[in-house]
Image 1: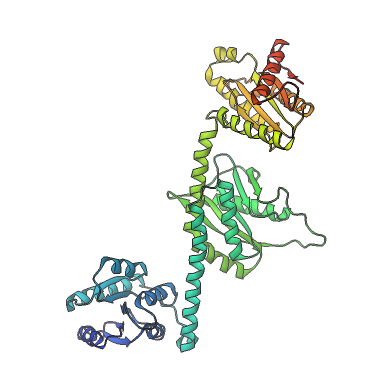
Image 2 (image 1 turned 60 degrees about the horizontal axis):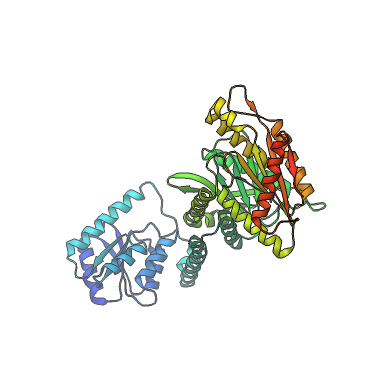
Length: 488
């Protein structure tokens, strides 16, 4: 009884004669293919237990045959031994890169070849134990079917290399995190078609869902709910999905529902983004419910999973490093140095386009007394709480930074003096009515604020704007503190 069926593919008659004799003497059944295309055809038709494949063959070379066999669901489990007269490390490297299971150089001793064959058959048998080999459709057993299958596989490899190349190009560009996520979703959207792309990252405090385009409220709510469910599957814990926020690229507002537009059910497919053996987020696609979408889109996501994770994680780390350089470590708002950069850009923009902006400098009243009485840990808690409170009083376009020890600066683009003073008053009242953590009972503090605007009288450069705001702050403190002063 024969041990196994072996397909031997080689165009050299002498090599075929010698190799066949060695294998048949060891009680193997041998079938011969004389070119690469015939090898693929016989692999489909005969479902051999093992393929011995020469590198240099007519029509399709051995590397290409091996790659096609390993990429096809019908033949990928068949072990492949590459057989060649070349004895160079690079040939072995490329042989194994194409998916070959082993590599044997011509001029081998019979026991060397038989040893490798026996080892691969044993491994293959263990791997397939209890599994039935996938039956090849009858249409593939015809010559036209083989050609069609080869073309499909080659098209698939071209598609794979194209999309992975597009994603790989992002890895070499130091874009900010948001821009990178947008680019990733754009690339995938071009392939998948009319689908909403979603990147959902697990943060320490909140979870932000980045969506590639505006969509109706119901869909966004479904995305938030489904995103929360998927995150929970991977161990991200939160009290409710209300902590999930949405960031939509392109437009700030969602698309309004059109008149008579029906409510729809949506299908979701997703992949985890895993870095350092930890799930850091999820990439998902959402489309109107469709079985074909689930099948095809999931296959595409599985294909790009590793590349997407690398690109997004690199952007995340780059952004984290950048944030460390521009962020105050205690309050998590911008630091003094970066604020000065933004301030200079706004001043230049104002000069160039004849726009107006305002500056607020605020200081915590009697803060030294707070530190002396309750300790610096309490003072730190107040600084952190105040930073968050000031941010909550501002627009998304406004900038707040820690300017000094207990001083904060606020930059208000496109804002005149009257509106800036109203913002300062809003901040002052919010601070006055807030009890900050730091002691068991909590602690109340007040702030004084100075407001200046540009253009204005006697202001020629940035230093003059800062001096004017500082002067207004000094007036506020001299007048009794807990007040805002605007200098015309």
